[in-house]
Length: 412
Image (cartoon, rainbow, N blue to C red; front, top):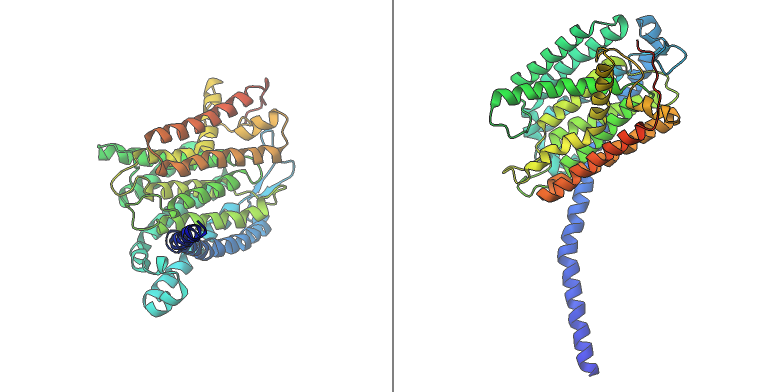
């Protein structure tokens, strides 16, 4: 009996050793490679952008008064003293400066393949030639963002009519959609309609982040969370049909995330500078472009429901925009007439402090975004549950907001 038991134990030990040496070893190596990829990609994208934006925003803050970029308090403002504007210029510089260094480094490493293979993980170095081919595309997209950044600066300084701003936003969006052939993944078999929807999507996100920029660290923080969540979704490579993670799009989002973190160092309550329209226009535009460049459903479209992932991640900014426009139209006012009816203001009406309102919106954004991470990994009914959770989250927010019986009445 003891002999049989010892033979059984020996066999068990052999099977355990074999199990550990195969499946777990493979999983562990894959995890290490994934962590290395994410770490290096974050270091070479978000790192420089954060540093450049932090320095640039500080410079703009010191020169804001002389540049005429000051946000003076009034009835609809949350601050009581003049605060510098133009933080968005620092965000833009963080993104442009990083891509400028990246483009130069890319062509240098292409001409020195031995150096590239020694300093970069293999998952990145094998894509250098593909990234070089897309360098022209990224600079065309940056050009569109540059136009919107300086449009925002002019609006910050001179308060341009909303008709002028909206017209230029549509022109820039149409230019990048048709010139770069960007298409919203919506499984609509009518190309011209898909293109129009893509243009509307870009303009909608530009204005949603502009409307969300109404409290310290709100729009910048929410945008940073969205960039991280979208990057994670693109890097974890959920689709078996894909040959690798979507490094190019993830890199564009991580660069913006780094620039936003550099800006938030100055914008964290109490803020010493605001991003202004220059920042909110650029941030909304850049995130919209990234969602159009991304692939959610795999090469063969195995998970078509994954196209709802961007809507889940962006649920809170879109909810704020739609609810504010609805309130203004219901009261017979222009949807572009600024006021204190935003999601964050309504939370303050419930008795929250401004910091509590901002953190609450952060948590709501994270909650909706976590559901989006599951969409490419689940079947149809799983997707229905994820989308239902996001809708329940927004419904809960709406119910909580309805508890307050009064709203500020001073439009501007």
